[in-house]
Length: 194
Image (cartoon, rainbow, N blue to C red; front, side, top):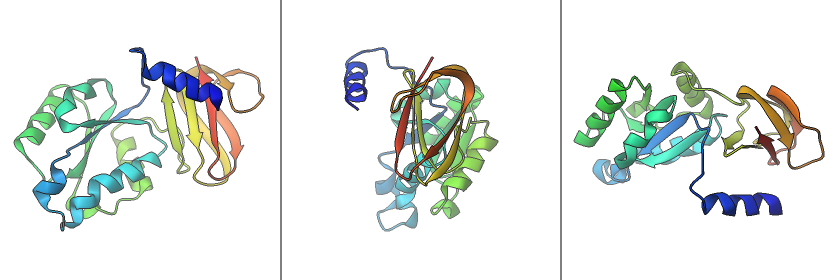
């Protein structure tokens, strides 16, 4: 754990942070105030953010004003209903359409979307799924981490063949595009990927 914290501090202080995330999520910080706090869709951004972690897909979050950062992602998720169209949202959609970046957007009926339903929509947009067992996955800066939502066998599919070295426990590095491991509920494992 000490190594992980030291490496995290080192990366945070550098300008060499790279991501392997495949989804850019654009949050509109003004959305709750535009629709009203009593509207059932007020919670949609929070719920989507919580569910997204359990899709087994990696993502980076941005504010809508930073939408141009989304050009290197497989898809963009707009976590508010399609019916919500401000001038800024229309500009974002046009920007993404011109660059042929798939957009996944919800409807007013999606305020209670599950992680599995969200995963299916993102798969339909061509997003890579690391693990389909409801676990949280992070992959970036040469590291891969999985946090087990449930106990059991986990199969992690990397987007390409990599040298994978376990960091939490003794084990030998292997070259593969897949990791199969048994995990306890709420356990977190980390790997170095090269």
